[in-house]
Figure 1 (tube, helix red, strand yellow):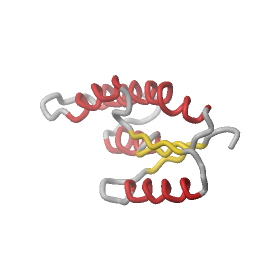
Figure 2 (spheres, rainbow, N blue to C red):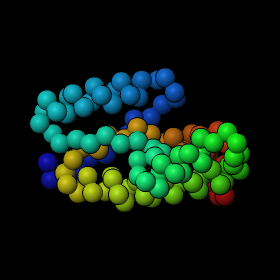
Figure 3 (tube, rainbow, N blue to C red):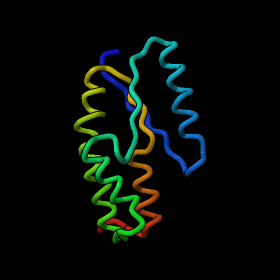
Figure 4 (cartoon, one colour):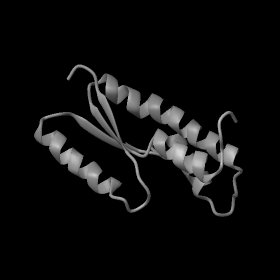
Length: 115
């Protein structure tokens, strides 16, 4: 495999993302393809800190602030995890990505474009 591939697994809680993530791993390994699994938010040191802020029940966030925290996590995630794995020719399986941001921060939190 010359370049890597990014596969994202999206869906509401309990929809089977984790199940399909692991089924994909079994298939990819059986095919001899190098693979890595990752997730958002929280796959990097900064992401773990941001995840704590995002999950905090005592720290209510305005929708736009919440969006920017997710985007900060994504910037680090892409730079530190996803891009290097793709450049190494790996199949990257990611639990949540851009579609979740659109659903949860866009529609769920009422953010519309342009901001």
